[in-house]
Length: 272
Length: 274
Ligand SMILES: Nc1ncnc2c1ncn2[C@@H]1O[C@H](COP(=O)(O)OP(=O)(O)OP(=O)(O)O)[C@@H](O)[C@H]1O
Ligand SMILES: [Mg+2]
Image (cartoon, rainbow over all chains, first blue to last red; front, side, top):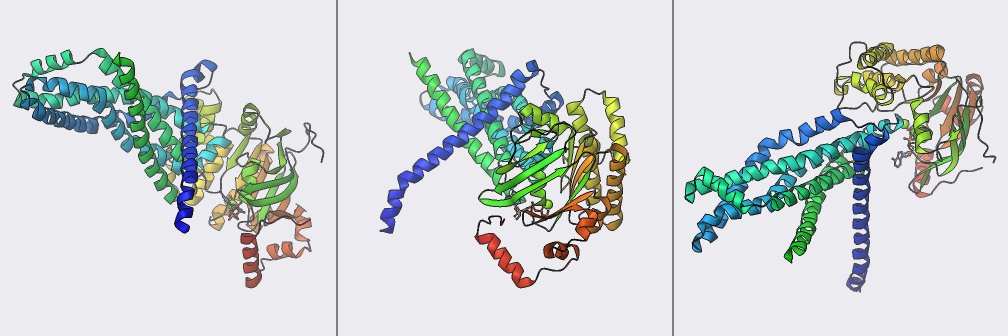
């Protein structure tokens, strides 16, 4: 009886959760839209952009992430080389290892790995920073000073991320190729120059630009989720932990979802 | 109830039958009062009586569920963003916990409203910051981070920030709560000085009786979300209302009644009794 009741309630629950999910994404879109407006349109309407704050964010988001992004993407490039060499060797086509690494890194893994590192470093930090400010009434203080919190807190992050995440992605692509190159030189009869030549032959500009377009989209998603989670922090310190966790988990999910949608569109439009 | 807009010369703040909810629970049950230009109104009340909620509503952080708050002739619930910004530039708020920006130095905290709303040179701003900090006795703490200040110093820094734009109206939430008597007296002194020097209108929330009687022109006593007394110091001191007397004479709440009230508060959505 009770079980039947629970089963009958499942569609309701699914419906409710779907609506909540849509409302969440709607909120993200509104926040991102507002930040985009302030950053891209606002300056032409006499509203102030806060370049120092954006610069400060760009340092935190981009420059300080370079070591870890370099290391991880180098390793992933090497791993991709090892994995594909294993298959290619059996087909007697080990010389294609540069192509395999280049395409998988530039189209997919570079943007994705960069996004995940940025989520861990910056998305969580956004949520924690804004969440703390919410708990200590700093966000309220901004409002009473007629300083709009979105313009003051979100817009500089939005701008910094929009510039820095694609830059980090290019760097990650490069380091990934270097990782592949290490294997190519050590285990597949390439020289440094011939590996780079093979890589550049394998890639077309389109591969790089779609990767960058994706990473720009990811940066918007990560900023919006991190800041929205920060603003939705309730009262109390333990709430900050909840927001930070939610920011990381939701960002990873949404980045993968956006990646899937984008890649599917890319596949469909380029099939013919 | 007439909804006419008060003209210039009328009260700076006018609150009519204000009701505020947090979710389902009504916290303020129909509060009305005026604050005249240049006047200091002290809002007194026990812990949890709704003082901070009232103050947050006055500065536009909470939306009224009924009634209205008029500031300088504008109903803030219906004000456009632009009107609201204009009002906010003319008011300073010092929060119960200070609410200093933890990522900025004390000097930058005070400079923020100046940098945001004026086109002053950085050198001018620096001088103004120093003046404001001197005013609250924090002259040499410009480069300290808020986390390096004591509770009382944070409060004073928050006051300096609230004063940055030379506001017409100042809102203080518990300026001296949790401070030692000497510093608390210093803050009272500061409030009196500001009143004399700038003729600011002030709304000060507190539960410290001595300080209230020192700084107030008029007082408002709130109990569980309703006004139980309002008037000049003398009127309040001479009041015969038992709840007012209890508060002023510091009579503890009988334990049983307290618990019953508490239960009542938790279980029913309290409607105001007329
Ligand atoms: N954000 C909130 N959400 C829900 N209820 C709240 C919230 N803030 C305050 N309350 C409730 O509103 C009531 C009044 O709180 P308020 O902070 O206004 O009291 P107060 O008079 O300022 O007390 P204190 O002197 O301790 O600062 C309390 O019962 C409190 O539980
Ligand atoms: Mg309070």
